[in-house]
Image 1 (spheres, rainbow, N blue to C red):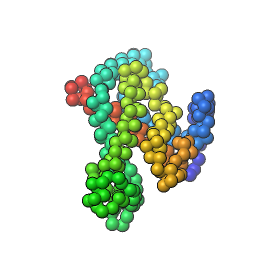
Image 2 (image 1 turned 90 degrees about the vertical axis):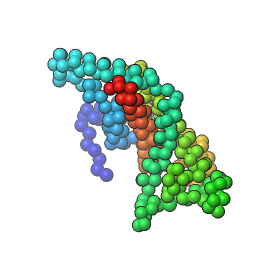
Image 3 (image 1 turned 30 degrees about the vertical axis):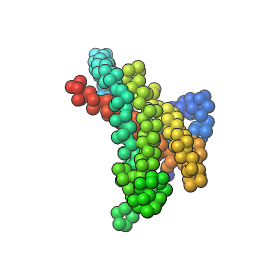
Image 4 (image 1 turned 45 degrees about the horizontal axis):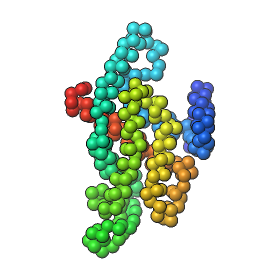
Length: 258
């Protein structure tokens, strides 16, 4: 892979970010940082929280246009704040249920396809007695099983994974609008995304101690994971953030707020 040539401004930002991480005692994560990955994550976050009236650089605008931009942004934030304040545990549970099934589909879609169109098999054992009786085996190919047809114990794992991620990001997303006037970059910078992703991975290890034998290379601290595995945890966090924001705006449309 070609190295990205950084200009002086980018280099200063990179150094500042690294100094910030080091000061927080995150030297292990620091050693694995990749500037391209940081920019990719920041781009996704920008897209999720897109606000046409908000920008960090209004220097090129006339004083009148700058005032108009700030006014529109504040008006937009006030509306979103009203939506955010109506988000409750019932809505959170809806998000968990939706992410619940999407996590499995997203995982399957990233697996290699066989010549017959099926996914590369992933055989796991189940403790679902009804499933075992029905199929005469405790083994199940979870890669070629739709979410709705998964054994009960594997559905439970997906639910717990989804609940963990939604619980981690829900209140943080709401705070962007209720407390921080839309300044999402302070709440979901790359360091914050990595910390959340690390918690997602830790929770997975706690739920699946048996994987220490079957997948020892994954049973390590987040910062020791290969980037391909980090990306999976990071993607769950970003997906959850996107879903909370989308649900909030969807609810706003339903009540005629937008």
